Image 1 (cartoon, rainbow, N blue to C red):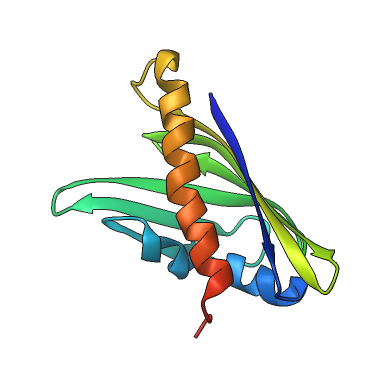
Image 2 (tube, rainbow, N blue to C red; image 1 turned 180 degrees about the vertical axis):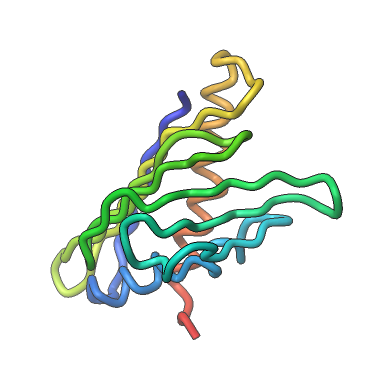
Length: 142
């Protein structure tokens, strides 16, 4: 399983950083050819499902993620339950000085891809999700 952790500091108070990290549709803003939305629930409760859909036309795959633990405003665990992408993600926010620190940890398995490629998947994940995290913490939510 490919694993990576990203940490970012922000001048935002923890509640604001949390609101931005859980603005699920905005996660797709920095991932090419990807749209993200809530498909079950509000995206704010255990059991809710977030769907990332990546592709062009008929060539696409879905990455459904179920919220398995939630403690606002500091923890969200997601279980990736797709046919292509499996694993889990954890988002955390905590107060640091006058601002906050966000931590995004992922464990990913790509169907059909040998474990030999885990370092490549982890590198790509750090790049892609690092851009998402930077974007979410740096721009307004509206």
